[in-house]
Image 1 (spheres, rainbow, N blue to C red):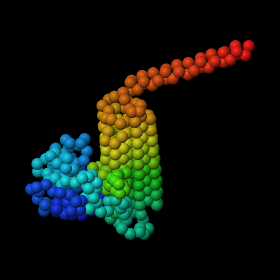
Image 2 (cartoon, one colour; image 1 turned 90 degrees about the horizontal axis):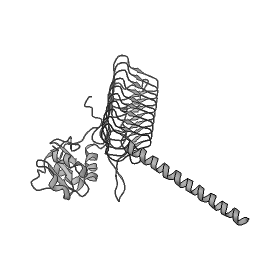
Image 3 (cartoon, rainbow, N blue to C red; image 1 turned 180 degrees about the vertical axis):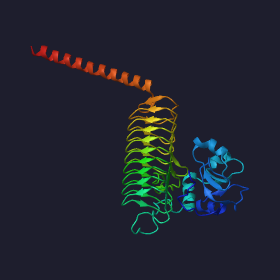
Image 4 (tube, rainbow, N blue to C red; image 1 turned 60 degrees about the vertical axis):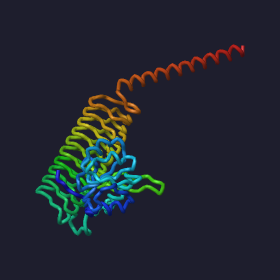
Length: 362
């Protein structure tokens, strides 16, 4: 996939300036004039980038990070590796949101598709369409978009600025594709929303601060997406749908989610932010996947289940919370048996009481 950037970045900024935005304290020996060019997650950050650490679950990521600087609470200061400048703040996640906002001031609201109102054709002059692309009436193709040979953009669809769509794809009526890179032979059914910002807010006593979402959506080859499904773009890293995956209607996929290859996700499933599905995972209808959960390769999750913890590969799971299917089915059968015995006992008690009343009336 192309390394396409959907948001214009400000900077670079000196570390001292960044510290001033958020009221951070730099540790002794820090080069306050160190230039910072961008923000990044711990696992991807390099020497010219800044990240943050706030969740103990990611201690290993912090230990291995190559970030030039990191926002941390005082209690975690000794965890920051040598070579990474530490900026101490009371709320690292909230402070990092402000840093992202300064680097990407336009990321908290939808970006423009065109730089002016289209006249005549809905294809922007800077867009590149390969041979055999067909854009139906009422569709809009934005600035610097690239659409591959044989792809059809159907009526009322919107293809955003710098979006890449591969060859032989079908983008259905009323679809919106923003901040996304699509591979070849992707089928997107009517009403799908791809690449809008994720639902991210930093809660606080003064209100809910919107978290800028500067990631993308990556959809690989041969994916099919059912009607009215929504796929949010990533916050820092990308939301990714692996090749050959099939997604039913009305599925919600949150920001930073990674779906592996050849997965099957049935209608009304909700996958919360930063969850990871391995390859060939199958999720039954109306199941819910919690944030930061990992489901292993070839795992199967039954309909109406709630996945709250990591699930190992190749297993079958069900229930609330989801657990191995045999265990869940045994528990369900046991509960049914208890309920049946209880109802039978109540029926016997009621019959005994009625017999007693009859004898008294005699």
